[in-house]
Amino acid sequence: MIDLDSFHELLETLLRNKTRSFLTGFGVFWGVFMLVALMGGGAGMKELLNNNFEGFATNSAMIWEQPTTKPYHGFRKGRYWNLTTSDVERLHQQVPQLDVISPMASKWGVQAVHDDHKFNGNVKGLLPEYAKVEAPKLYYGRFINDMDIAQQRKVCVIGKKVYKTLFPKGGDPCGQFIRLDSVYYSVVGVDYGGGNMNINGSAEESISIPLSLMQRAFNMGENIEMIAITAMRGVAISDITPRIREVIARPHDIDPTDEKAVMVFNTEVLFGLLDSLFEGVDLLIWLVGIGTLLAGAIGVSNIMMVTVKERTTEIGIRRAIGATPRVILVQIISESILLTTVAGMSGILFAVLILQMLELGFTEDGIVQSHFQVSFWTAIGAAALLAALGILAGLAPAGRAMAIKPVDAMREE
Amino acid sequence: MIHLHGVHKTYAGAQPLHVLKGIDLDIAEGELVSIMGASGSGKSTLLNILGILDDYDEGEYRLAGTLIKGLSETRAAEYRNRMIGFIFQSFNLIGFKTAVENVELPLFYQGVSRRKRHQMAMEELEKMGLTDWATHYPNEMSGGQRQRVAIARALVTRPQIILADEPTGALDSKTGVDVMELLKRLNREEKITMIIVTHDPNVASQTNRIIRIKDGVIEG
Ligand SMILES: Nc1ncnc2c1ncn2[C@@H]1O[C@H](COP(=O)(O)OP(=O)(O)OP(=O)(O)O)[C@@H](O)[C@H]1O
Ligand SMILES: [Mg+2]
Image 1 (cartoon, chains in turn blue, red):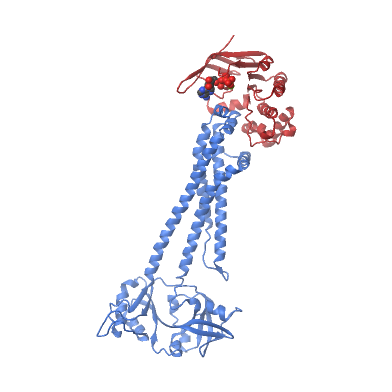
Image 2: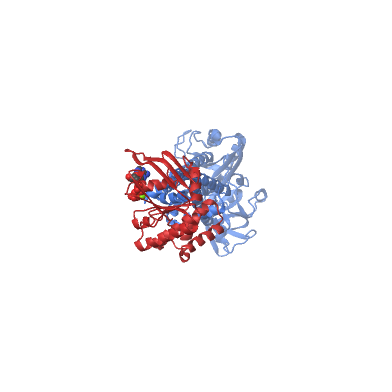
């Protein structure tokens, strides 16, 4: 339909009327830019948000202690109590629907020292199973294992910030010692898990050591601070929450319905909330993007309509010296397609550029924190959509252009 | 070459205007004729019908033996492109194209290759003495030069007929005379049939025959 020669003619017509072409194309440029940038940006934001919950098992919950809010067995409300290792035992025995039950203790504001570098972080006492609740992202070494517990080894896994501060020169710190209070611990791993869910303080600022070691070193006795649990496959945490609360509450003389005292924080609910939020955001992005794009296409159509009117003389002359209506039709539609495509491609390109910059901005230590970039196929899809829009936008103006008779043009002047 | 018999033309509208009321006209090959008449007498209307730019309502029009009636737009475009060259009072060049590109355009619609049509257009411009102006845009040229570009464009397809609607109307008398000389020479040397609509008696007197329109019919 269109040979090289016609294409040349087309290009010249567009290039010699730069302002007109620019104005026509801009709407589409902007529409595509918005659509692609929003899609990429939305996906990126989603990933960033998700990063906060990174590594967390979706069917998990955290149990911690708070002062009672209901009187029970003659005790007043507002009583302080302590979770202990026996609670973990009882959960194991009485709630078979639970998979991992991992107690943890923590202490804030402990100074960690290596050479003359100091860091004020929080120490967490953990068991190896904890990795099943919040998966560590080990940059160096390993997580605390069963041997560490059995042999009471003085080992620790340090978070990213701790590592950066204590070992500013970088390199693998495993095997080196850091001091917490007066005790030296050998570093066995560096955890880059960036999760910001702040379970007992953010992972970045934490120093994890075996739980029993912690209880002894900091004189905690049997007390623990929190129990992380995951449910067996197919079991909803929310269904077994009352049972969990009851098992823990009874021996401590707490009302089993006291939801404040035995706090069971269910991540399931959080993830569900997040999912519906993202769905809404996605819908919004599509609506806004498609809307802008459509507005752009309608803009092109409109401007081309005006253009055709303005070009009555030119088109009339072309007709008088031998252009058939079909030639004019093809010309106008081709102009429209070419304009939309070029403008659209620039829009895609520009958006990809911006997204790339965003992605670079969110890259640390060569690890991409969030993928903003749209996929190749998304771009192709957008391009195809554009070509179709170009044809649609060109239809009405082309129809009008075709109706121009040579005599009309002669009389226009 | 041209044969008109009982041609009528009415412009529709709130008040239909019956402009041509039975035109009978024969023009032989190689003739140089002028059409004169008062303003609004229908000269341009007649020329548009001759040029297949417009339709007529009644009668018949034969161009080189072919009946021209109710042609499709596509056929009309083809005939115009191959047989007829137009020259207008207001030149009607395309402003964003250079002189040579304007001259090339009819050949583009004939599907002549890029190289060939450029060469043909340049030859035509050379005959008009416009070689140096080939790459200039119309607004950089004088009226006389523009009209000569338009003439080159009309001639480049080697048409059998040239239709000119007041070709000297927008030019000063000196340039007008030059353009007339040019048209006369083309008629003489290339044997192109030429029909010139004009108000200027001096222009008309240089043609072989003067056709006068009055009240929608040809006088005399
Ligand atoms: N497309 C049209 N629709 C309606 N009326 C028209 C149209 N074209 C021309 N007319 C009318 O038809 C009549 C003849 O017009 P035409 O242009 O043929 O006159 P003309 O002889 O060329 O005049 P002039 O010497 O001023 O150019 C005029 O009254 C004009 O108003
Ligand atoms: Mg006229």
